Length: 367
Ligand code: F6R
Image (cartoon, protein in one colour):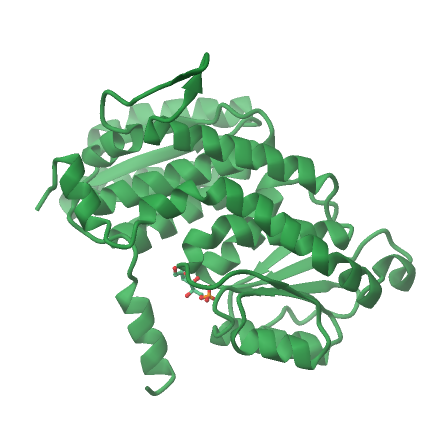
């Protein structure tokens, strides 16, 4: 079933995922402010400057899964990080992790098995610096071990809380001397997010006039082009982790198959795989271009498109308008969230519930 009218779309969005997207700018600012309260504790507990004779830790390790883990990937996209940021998405810390490194554990629910396992390992190795959570077992364990906690409000889907989780992580990373000027960057991210929201809700204020949308919101028009196609998201440089976020949002919101890959590597393998794409279904490629794209990679995208376009039902491209990395990151995040949500709605799918994730967690917990 493909849904056409705006009122039908609103009925399908029973838990208001579109409304959650509109909160992202405020979430970013709130997350950064929440981290501010924990910063003194972070500095007191983990004075790496004095301890290791360096201006920051050797690495920042961000442990978290799904919507909570994505911040670890996005940090390096949005900021010029001073040390390697390693996103751990599993049960174990890297074997080399020690007290020279800082571990931050992020779990919206505080109940995620992999993140709890990493937290325990990080406590054992005296390397855990902070926890970002709405509570749960992770919140309790952190309190028990005297680990600084950035508390976020419960009641959202973790992936829809990306703004507050990312703002919090940026505040923590700044306190650990991994990034600088986080407040300005978060503000820029919030403004860029708002600009995309305005394009979609028709509330953009131009020259003192409120602009109403006359046509479909732009991401809805794009979603209509890929309703029955597997989406493949391509990034390059800073947009690679954002391509993974789009993939995950299309999976979770639209309950739709999606995959991600990166230029220039895909030009050395995946480009050949498209030859039999038609025999394997219908496919759409979406490319994400950031402000600092290398000219060589842009040329590759153009040439690759010319070679594969006949194998695809749609080929879409997003070029950011924000010129800074934090702004460009959240400009693309919001576009991706809208596209994934509208793709759900046009296919008659409620974007909010993720029954299969819940079922899996319950079965693994033996419930
Ligand atoms: C659900 C979602 C999931 C969760 C993941 C980990 O909206 O985004 O990817 O984020 O299952 O759970 P939390 O975030 O509670 O640690």
